Length: 446
Image 1 (spheres, rainbow, N blue to C red):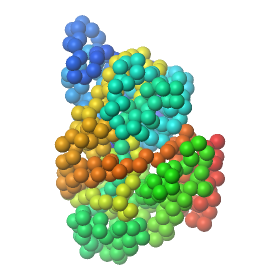
Image 2 (image 1 turned 90 degrees about the horizontal axis):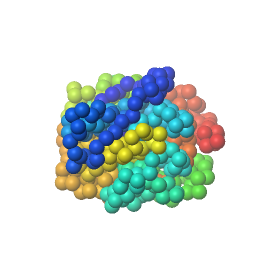
Image 3 (image 1 turned 180 degrees about the vertical axis):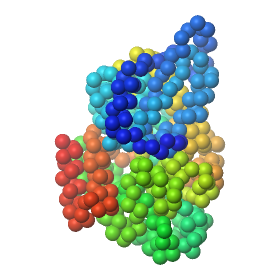
Image 4 (image 1 turned 120 degrees about the vertical axis):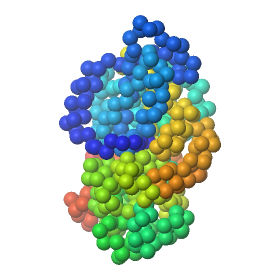
């Protein structure tokens, strides 16, 4: 999910301060859904619906959609509050506090896939969207996307925004400098396997001394993890009974082993993704490749800036596919205007809106009608050398296999990735990293 502009990482203290401000702000709402809302009374005070989001680049890609809504609905205005780039480390822990306390959450809140297990387990946190006529939206989404937004007792609490899909973004100009092919089809042919990817990296590094082949360990760790998860029962850190299986799942070990080998080969810029340093590295050309689910396109272009337009391109990943990421919108029960908030969530996850977000920013729609839109199918991305992103990600959406994510997936993911990145930057010794990863995962799972 996620992606336009803001590269800055909100510090924990800044987020806490924002929490106090947000908690004191009024919620909002009004009018029925977007397409046929009646005109508001001239005397009515406009109401603001607060939509809280996270993520780098264009985050959820709502800028243009919100501007369109606000121009057409004078009695209800949407205000996006982008709280931080970091979901597991900052956004979700803070959101859990607000949801538990019954105060501070927005009228509509974004939830990454890693938080949905916990969200589903707490129906008391959420408004039931059935009460606002949204049960009919079921036909708009793949079954797995819809069902992830429904609690065990049948409450509809979340509507799907985007899905991940998978590709690999690369600097075509730097590949040319290294004497490598630059055409995306020929680039993909260089690395049918991850071992081949490493060999290409070594060729690149031998010719280009001032740029590392890839950003760090974590983006590619996640690509490998989710590819391997699809081969191992579609589970990652937890089995489908919510038992922690970090040390038992071959998918986790495969991702870890690849990340360790990549780091020890000297091919990484040793950058932690979604940090200010990582964003600056994108702009300065510190690395030439990065794992790219669809929402990462906007992150990369937002971080790199317009001066890098046409220097980046998109190719298939080694191994052929995979999925990483995707989010939902939910209406907290504490909202003072749940009906109007539900209308906004309905609008932001509608086929037309999700299609426009993809063509504007790159977030692949989870809405099946949007996926079938000719504008989506034929979309190209100017920043990424006119890459046919509609063709690339629509194909991955068709074969997408959702991976089960446990109730405490976000907490365990944060602990695991801290070790994966720590061994790259030297804070965790390679020979002790696996055991630390397992131990930290156990602690995070509680």
